[in-house]
Structures are given as structure tokens and as C-alpha cells.
Amino acid sequence: MTYSKKATCRFDVASWSEEVLVDIDEGEGTAAGGAYYPKRGITRATVGYTYTGDLEGTSTLTYLIAYKADAAPVLGMERFTGSIDGQEGSCVLVHTGSQDAGSVGGRLEVVPGMGTGGLESLRGEAELAIGGHSDDGYELVLSYDL
Picture 1: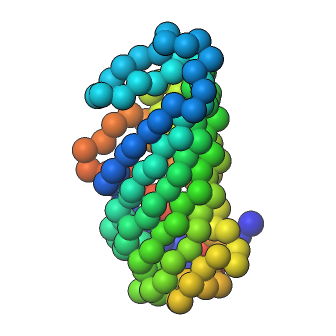
Picture 2 (picture 1 turned 90 degrees about the vertical axis):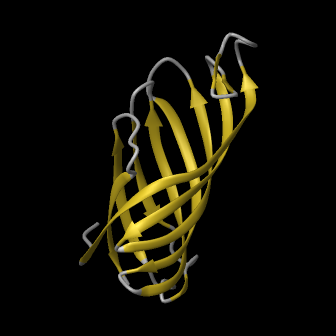
């Protein structure tokens, strides 16, 4: 779909809490930073993001993550509250993507009918490509219409 506007921002991970729902190989995973990640399995992560730039605000996101050796699927629902190019309100984004040991890729889409305030009629999407850890956040470009 083609949109008439673009909003560029950076987002940072403000919080991350992940719990194992299914551990297929029971205990053969990896412990890191006080958390356990299954070799093959499913986890649920509750994440807080902060946004700066054309998107200003915060969000809460729940991911379902499938761990496996390659291109593991990731699904998420995010509620953003703040402003997009000065329009205040909230919206919901659905995330679909995949991850491996060194990268995350995905697509974000605005869920129509879930916006409030100045973002009530928001429609849009973004592609996400992260290659490793960054101490200064990650870029996101949202193509959208209001």
C-alpha cells in the first residue's frame, strides 16, 4: 500500500521481561543475563519502548517468540501512546517477523480502528531490520496516512 507521509524516529528498549512458555528440549537452552532462553521453544516477552523523533512517546508490547536454530518467528502487539508529527493519541501496531542469533527483521502494521485522539484514523506500516545490539537505539520509518 502507498502512504502519503513518512515519520522517522528512533526507539530504545526501556524494559524487557521474558518467560518460557514451552521448552521443547527441557533444559538444553542458554542462560544469559539472569534469563533462560530455550534451544527450541516458545517465550512471551513484555517489552517497554521509548520513541524519539517524528514519533514521540512510549509503548508496551507483548511478543510471542519461537526459538529454533534459524529464522524463528516473532509475533507481537504493541500499544503506542504519544504523538506522530504532533498529533497526540494512541494506536496499536501488530508485529510479524523473524529472528536469528544476530538479527531481527519484521513488519509493523497499524491496526485500523484502534487509534485514539489525533491518531484515531491512523493507517500505516513500517519495515524493521536490526543487525545486532545498539546502545543508541534503532531507527524506524513509519509510512502512514491520518
